[in-house]
Image (tube, rainbow, N blue to C red; front, side):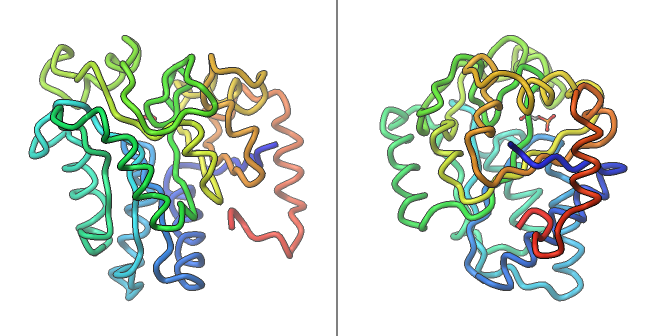
Length: 262
Ligand code: PGA
């Protein structure tokens, strides 16, 4: 079962995950961080950037993004290449050559998934994977129905995901139809997973992922298969969980030898 940690808000979540990331990098300076995009991981990146300003050196850390839109110009401000550069590489002072985003350019797209899988394997795998969750239960861009064994490949976005992401574009029609995303099988290979969710809009998806049946209809339920998955949620995102009192009790009684997240 995933460990569920309820925090007062986004900043507390960001601080907690940044702390775990710093600990990871202290033990392994070239650790591989799995990078999520969207609004959800921003508090983590902000908290890490603050630590970098205070002297934390992430110059050897490596990163792999979960996904990218297909056919979007790399220089488009909403391409995940641009988002990762703007929200992660620059503020965290990462070496650009150490950070990878799937290649969503139409030319060569047939082999882009395989090339990305090879790059992750060559890096020794992801140490800590950050995840958001879509209102339709996706992680990465693994839309409902995605195989639990899937690897990086092209997926067609659902109407719901395109509507959710329309806020980032001038018009809803500008949201790309296709993405290239790490598969659920790729994500499950990471050594640790941290799924973050904030706000009432995520409550149903979180409950289905954590407590619902293991089903491809809720791709995030795949985290139940992972031995070291942590779900960090605010009160609103936690509000649909049936066993909330147990999760609070377990966290309040967390053994001292069991560090938060790592
Ligand atoms: P969000 O998206 O962080 O912008 O809410 C999450 C997701 O779609 O995975």
